[in-house]
View 1 (cartoon, rainbow, N blue to C red):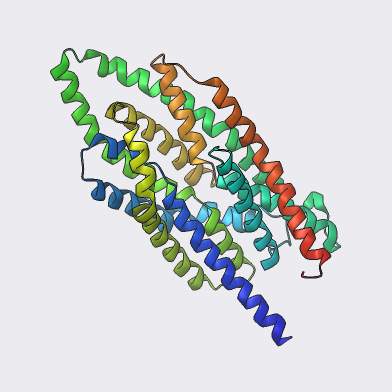
View 2: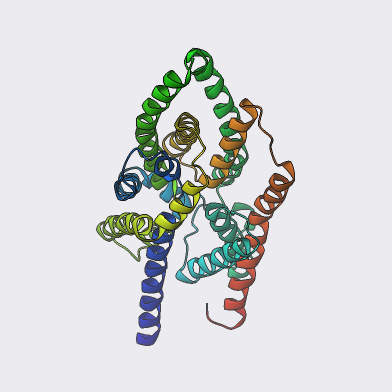
Length: 345
């Protein structure tokens, strides 16, 4: 009995450490600050500090709704995560994301995590006895999450398209001559600072991967409420450090490709994506993919400016996006079934 207790305690520590790692990776892979870095309005180190502080602030103060949905509310009545279920979820999500990275596709960690949860819970219900797989989930909540994955990118495309058209008609198109255009873009470069802060705030709030795991540990009694909030603060600090230490390379690389992009374009794209993330987080408490939203915002901008859209590349990305949920579910289910088969659970 003592050995089992110690083993369970070790697994909880492992899960917390993995949650910390996920938080660091959220900052390390966040590209939101790239347009601001490209604009050159502020020193690069200041850009990183602003972005990191905003993502940390959003994580601490606005993330609980999404975290509680992932960590408990998505499950059916009477079902709680076990540490082995959470371990299978994390292993599966990480493996699928690695596969996507090798393929050069920006997959969603949110889609991977929710898909993994689905697969693990179904296998748990089938082999635990007394649990009907049909009641293993809060299907209304799960359906809302999946629906948001399709609606949020579409809203990003349409919203960015309309926002550009409105700003262009009311302001941009009225600027004549190089001096007026340059002055206008300098003003947008400063407005972009506010848009980036707004966007990073909701990126932090909506990134539920790590906090969902912590909330699950709190929900099943492995963490106290004080412990949960303490670890949330640690995750926020790690997201800040991830952006400042490792994210600088992603941001700098992307910024070098955006030197010809206008600050007004970056402002419109970031504002549109931030509004969508805010509504998904505050109103609906559903985790969505920021990378998917921002990609479709860029497409909306290109369409509004009548630029060419690479539909072939977009189609490849769409296939991987659609496959993420079922493939992660199958992989996680197999991992958890392996735990059962070897008598680990």
